[in-house]
Amino acid sequence: LMASGCNENSTPKPRGYFRIDFPEKEYRLLDTIYPYTFMYPTYVEVVEDKSWNAEKYWINLDYPQYKARIHISYKDARGKLDSLLEDSRKLTYKHVLKADAINEKVFSNPHNKVSGVMYNIKGNAASSWQFMVTDSSKHFLRGALYFSVTPNKDSLSPAIDFIGEDIIYLIETLNWKENNSNRNGNS
Image (cartoon, rainbow, N blue to C red):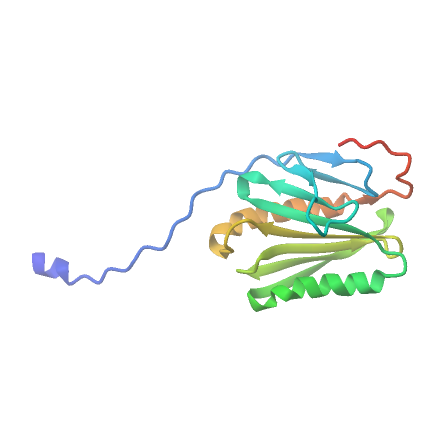
């Protein structure tokens, strides 16, 4: 009996990851001095982008509990929409070396004059979600999700999916402000 027990081929157990309990989805309106508004999760911190290359109206949506951040950059699209669209596409496809796949989803909301593309980058790429939206004339907004940890699709997958739902809702609720000079800054 003892000899047969020693001859067992043991296989290592698959690596397990901590269970993540996500909060209930609840959103509030971001309505500030920025030329755009959208609904964002109540469990997110909205922070002005203070990086060295940040421009006016750039913000970050921080998920401190998941060490995640959505970088949101805004540009005036007048006269340069084609180059902004191409730059956005190039930035997304820089991740192709580490990506297993890049899935594109087209968004169009003619009522709010919002159209764009959302990219779901599968695999161990640095960014899992990226998107760009525009009104095709004046406004251009780009977003990218990054985690402050080494990319691991297996352990990050639940958080990536959870935040992806927030990004979709952000895009669906996005509105452009035509005249933001008379607005008060509050959120």
